[in-house]
Length: 542
Image (cartoon, rainbow, N blue to C red; front, top):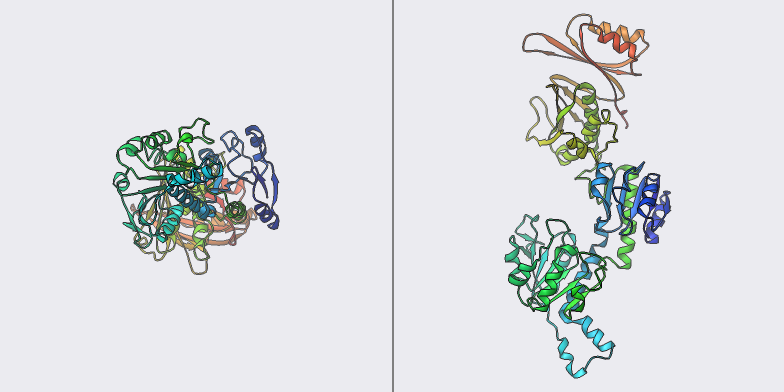
């Protein structure tokens, strides 16, 4: 394995890679064409905010499997292109939580007490000491702080504000509870109502259409209290900066402190630059020694974990996938892979839909993971595009395949415990499903293929033969395999009686080597053979 580090990282991050025995190259300042020429030679890429990982960079990703952003935002990484190519994108949001929260509080204090203005006036000699009361500030204790976004950073800010004797209320459309932090923070559902109650507002939300200009001209001029202090340490686009400048000039609000801007760096003639009651810093939220070390080490650690074991930390485009399962849960992931591969062999025709159904207490926790694992195996042999758990949903939907997952309240009739089932609907009108489970021994079992019942461990080279239930079929199969020197290690036989009274049987053979073309053609030429499929599954320990 080898990693490309395309931005400057803290030495501790590089030391971590070295201690892990992972090879890496540091190539800082690569232009788009240069980065595009390099990435395919590496298993992973680590960046900060400097390197731009565009669709052009990822057009031919070679063996690239993951990109880690040492920091929170991933604005410099094309997520759609990464996902389409099956490349996992990670960030290190948690590593800089404390530093970012502290910076928001520092902005709030600086703004409330007019510290930057007083400092500049005194240090430049412009201060008339007798008139220093011009820098009289406002006390934060007793004021109401409105926290927009009750994620990691928002909760951290709220906790510290409460300790400062501030009243804290929250706004977060994705926070379902009525209160947060053990009832200490009241959540308000309506943003305009929220604005009408607060003296200070601080933003801790992602960018995007959902939060763009959340604080806009209408709200600044018509909804806010005139003593409002605005803190934006999140994303520049959350606040309409030009409306904010106008609101400050016209005293519609009392002050604003920004660390982020819609365009960075902001233009030299930005309207906020000339306003006295605006405190501005150049995107320093996570810029502490501790945070820079933490994001570098966390980025490198997350990359190594994914490359070595499949563990996913801080995923941005993985959609709830979890691959590092506990020992009693991992067998269900193995089962999903084997079900997908068996169904791929057993089915003919294109897929219209793939549906995962699970029941029990363990399997339902990881439905998204199991569905993706099974779908990868169903599609892998039919596509010339590499497919994995990152891009499989994108690929399936782009081909019109419907993916669904259902949590069943109880297992199918006749079965007990955690049951994982996958059904495929085919364009030729057929439908097939396989049900399975994992016992206490940690081994996956297939319990049903369509209406054929069994209990078998799917592993290694296998042959599935559906035939008319008539005398001589077992002997035919045994003789044909024996003549071809293909040893049958194990065999499971089950039968189904059709509504019209006819019966079909299903033979599942574990063989020491896959049967050759001649064996397959010989058996398929017999009128009693309805379906014959050969498939290679992972071994028992894989």
